[in-house]
Image (cartoon, rainbow, N blue to C red; front, side, top):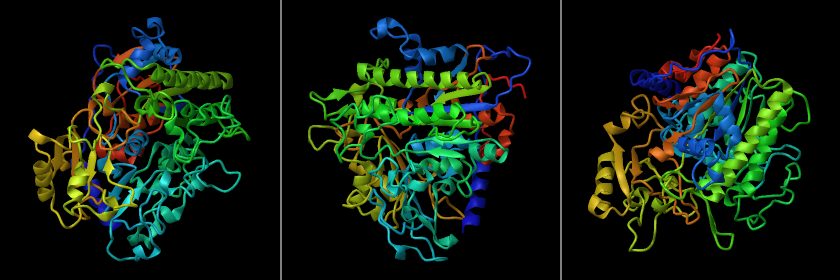
Length: 587
C-alpha cells in the first residue's frame, strides 16, 4: 500500500507542479563584491509570527516607538547587506509543522503530506498508548497487514515521554531531543508490521539536513518540540548531528544556565496550568536556551557547550517570543496585559516591542559569535518565519463566544460533529480527545457517514451568509481541494492525509475558543501567510525584491549557496521549486 501511495502521490504532484515567479523588480539584484562568493555555513532562523511589515517597522522605525528610530538595530544592520523579500508566503495551511517542513524540504503539503501538527491519516493506525494530549491509543488497534483504521496524527508535545518536563522526559542528564520521543505514542503503519512512524519518516521527502549531512556537512537544529526532529527525515533520524528541543509546553522551571532566568522573571506563570507561552517574560528565557545553543555552535562547540564540534554547515532555530507577543493576553497579571498591535499599520504594543527587541538582541549575539569564530564572512544568514499571525489589527479578533449577541458561536467541526460526520478521534464531542484541527482555519476529515457534498451543504445551511454563526469565509471541497492538494482518499486514487474539507473564516475569526489570545495562525489569510524574508551576507548589496516568493524556496537556495545541487531535494524535483531570485552565487 505504501509503495502504491508513493507512486500515486508523486504522479499527482508532477502533474500539478507549480513554480514560483522569479522577477526581481527593476533592480537586477546584488552584485558580487568579490570574484567568488563561497558560503561554508548557513544560519537559518525562523522568527515565528514575524510579518514583512514587522521587519519594515522595526528596521526603519515607526512613529511613537523609540522616537521613530529603529528598534531592531541588529536586523536593520543585516538588512544593509541583505536582500529583503517583501511578498513572501508561508505554506498553506500556515501551521508550524507544514511551515517548517516547507522551509527545510522545498515542498508543499501536497507533496509532503504535512498539514498540521495535529492532523489525520487514513492509512495509519492509532498509537499503542494514548498521547499526552489525548489521542487514544491501544496496542490492539493495529494489526500487521490489515486494512488501516485511520488515526489522528500528532506531532507536537503529546508524543513526549513526559510533556510537563523541559527535557520532554528524556533520561536523566539528557537535555531533550530525540530521546524525548515515546515511540508508543506515535501513529503506526499496518503495512510495515505496525511500526511507529517517527517524525522524520512522517515527512515524505528528504530535507536540506539530509542532503548536507550526506555530503559530509555538519548539521544542527534547535526547535520547540522533539517532534520537530522531522527536519532529519527520512531514514533513521541520523541526519541531524546536533538536535536540541527543549519542550515549550512544559511547566516553567528556573534556568541556571540562562542569565536572569534563575529564578524565572515571571513567577505569576509557573504553575501546572502554565507553560512558557503563557508569559511575556518567561518565553524569553525559553528562547534563550536555544539562543545559547546557537552561540555555542557558532563558536565551534556542541549545543550545550560541553564539547568541541565543527561550526555547523547548516544550523539554526526558531524563536517563539514574537509569536507570544502577538497572541497573548496574560491574565495572570493584574490588570491583564495584552501584546499584539495598536492598529492596522502594524504598530506594536510596548509588550510586543519588547519581544522583538529581545529577538533582535539575540541575533546580535549570534552574529558576534560568528565573528569571534571567524565564520561570519563565509556564513549566509537566512531569516524568515514558519508562519505569520492573524489579525494584525488586534481589534478585529473574533473568537467563539457563548453569548447569543456575538456573531460567532460555533465552529465548522462542531456543526459536522453534531451530525455524526467526524471520526471520534477528532470530534469536539470527544471528552478526552485532542479535539478538531481548528485555529483560524478548519481542516475536516470525514467518516463514512457523510459525503463531502453532504457536509458542505450542512455547513452552508447551518451557517449561511445571512446568519454566519461559524464566521465562514470560504469552503473548499471536492475539485476545489485538488487545486491546492492531492485528492483526498486512500491510494492508489487518493492521498490519505488530505482533508476532505478546508474552511477559511472571515478575517479575525478563530475557532480556538481561548480567551487568552487575540491572534492565531494556521489559515490562508494574508496576515497568516505573509512573513519576513531576509538573506544577508557581508558581500551583498542591499536590495528589495517585490515579486512573490515562498518560504519553500529557502531549501533549494541554501543548497545552492553551499555549492550543492538543489535537485538533490525530492520536493524540488517534484514541484519545480525555484531558488530565490536576486542572488548571485560564486559556484
